[in-house]
Length: 283
Image (cartoon, rainbow, N blue to C red; front, side):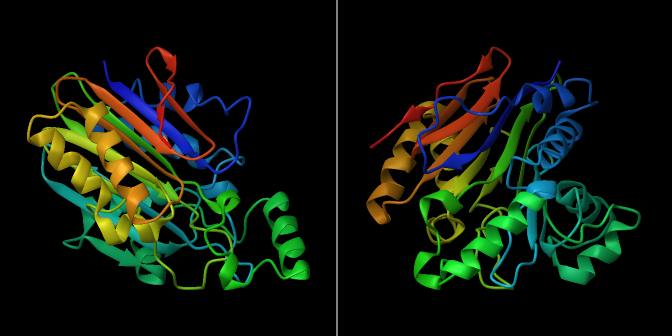
């Protein structure tokens, strides 16, 4: 049985009810192993139009979608990422890069060529296009608004399978109103995603903060050095808050099946075998 934890992205808003992710977690339960389970769970998250990944992704300053994703096989020590793509399931495109190329990161049309028959996306949901039109009309696409609380979210999953294999996956539509060509942390190993034979970590928040601090690697290294995942996540979230007071979340799972989840922000949906988790909310 696969041990699966999924998250739907940190929000700057305090919500009374966070979205249910039970279906996305269940999607990976019947998968053959950790890597299959991560892909299946993240694909389900990408299919949720209410989440900023795949089908429901936010739009950049030009009103276009540019999606990123990363997939890490901790047991095998392998990783692949894709950036600035426009497919419904970027996580599956990352797996194609992992398994069918000698490369670690592909972008744009070069990545699409590896995708073969993967469904392409021409845009996002009507709600996201309406949101962009309102923001353009009101001047809210100015770069000084970049990274505002309501613009931040990512999805991801960490999995430990019955054979002790561990994996992580992350997918995002980026940050609303970002400059075209911007790449976030999700497809960058050690920044928005990390996995080793001992631990898998995924992050959520403004990617620049995770890129500049290698936040997921920091949390993973603490677990590898003997700290439990919960304390590791909390320690790094506190550190990130000292660097820049932005919304951020970390979800970690170790080889013993111990999980940790901590965040700064308004709310964060995280779900595991026992249902919704209550991640530690730090000041």
